[in-house]
Length: 485
Image 1 (tube, one colour):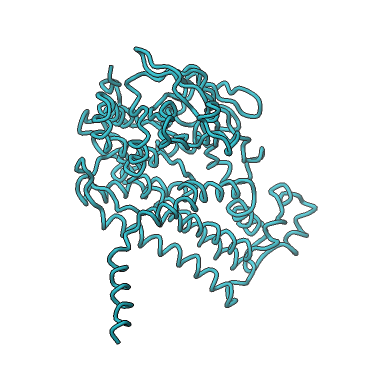
Image 2 (image 1 turned 90 degrees about the vertical axis):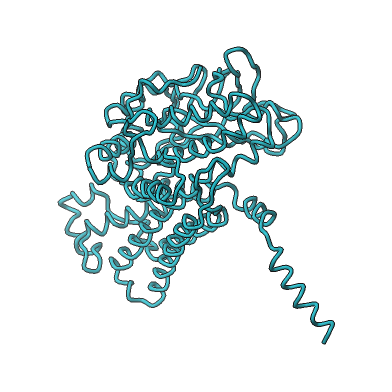
């Protein structure tokens, strides 16, 4: 039976989103099971951020015009992130919506709902190949796109196998990877674990579509693409420790700690209408690029917003301590801006060079090299800001210090900045510290480095796929002339 969309009402409201998370899901943090994600102190600030975004999308006419459209299937107002673009105008409108989502969070939410919605667009785009492999799976992919769009689902994915023993193979120890242990008339039964499901406690469903043994012969039991509600019986979500301080004075972590989680599947039933691929490792490997064609562009757009934030914070920190006129500092600030502008132009280029897919959608040109460049650039920008702020990122007064009548005269005299008071300087430096130096910043940098896949392996794939034939021929022609001289 196909997933139903006839009762769907389109866009979430803030309240409906909060209520939707109270669905009996099994979420654990700090050794305790969470009764209700939306009310838990570790999760409520981030839930409120997402709820407020949903409200802004409905209440602000300009935001609604950019980020939503009318479903061609039901007429519901739905997220434009789920749109299926077939013309340059539709593609531009789609990525204007991505720009809206990423700007709202200053590029801090790697799992902004826009990202996974674009993965589902890619899943729809691959439906013909899925259907040809096994009857019904392609239709499942199309139906799931409609279901996710009409219900305004917030999604996560979990792609990595658990880090138990990477020197061994799941073919020798099946607990090393998620696997199918049974097929029956209701669906597939799966057992194992997956990491890292960013946004898991705040999501409605999870998509699984990758593992480390996809293309190996004999690994068919480990190859599966499916979607599953987060409250599915037998699914346990283990979250890492929260990054926000109890006093909530770390602004970014308090609102943008999107959480990461391990998912444990204890003989979980995945109904057949939620299965998109099974057992075909080559088809899965081939499809990975196809289904991420739009989400990669969404990631570039998010990282551009993050770079813009870095550029502003770096300049403001330099000004706050009076070093912004130094030649070396100006070169550093200009370097950050050069990365920001390069990415802006590359994003525009990927969209301008869009090509039709086999199903007739229009997708940005492949830009994997840009993604691995971004991973390296992120680390360089962090290094620059750390050097500019130096020891100022280690020692700044807290809000309690600023409120102390005894301490404040000393702080005003010895901890103010260049044309900036101690309170504003302290808050600016603490914000910068969150970006580059504390637990939140370090987590964000690790995410940035690994989100697009291992850079080394990615560059190797680029080497194998890159077409040098035309230029190689030119080089051969040039060096062959030497023999005739």
